[in-house]
Length: 142
Ligand code: CMP
Image 1 (cartoon, rainbow, N blue to C red):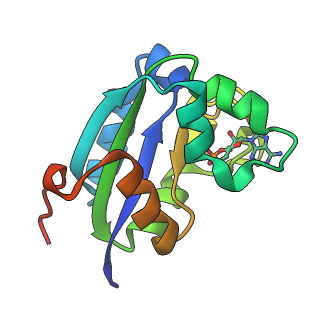
Image 2 (cartoon, protein in one colour):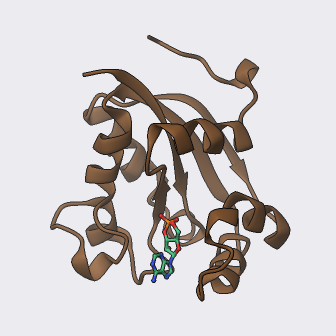
């Protein structure tokens, strides 16, 4: 399995619930290393740039408002099969459909307030990591 990088965001709802530590524990216990981390409070415009791929979707405005409603923790994760592994740990986008024991099943309240974001491909991971982190702020173990 290839060593990959992926972007994780702990969203404003999960930051507010004080479950950052629980989410990081799940990553580390599953051999994902945090190679970059920062807490930021995005503006609605910045959230809009991050989620530009969804600009035509009906939920885009609410998504940008929610993602700029409080601070988020952005993390670059590294490990074998990191993109898929992170998505398995997160569970389905809609927490009602998320498997038991996943982050979203345990911590998400709705499809909007769904606790975490994770990149959906290695290509998008590189773009999303670059949104938050210059190379100098990434500390690879690979
Ligand atoms: P995320 O993985 O951050 O990617 C885009 C976000 O849009 C998604 O999680 C959800 O929180 C939010 N969203 C709201 N409605 C929908 C929907 N119908 N389909 C997909 N994502 C949605």
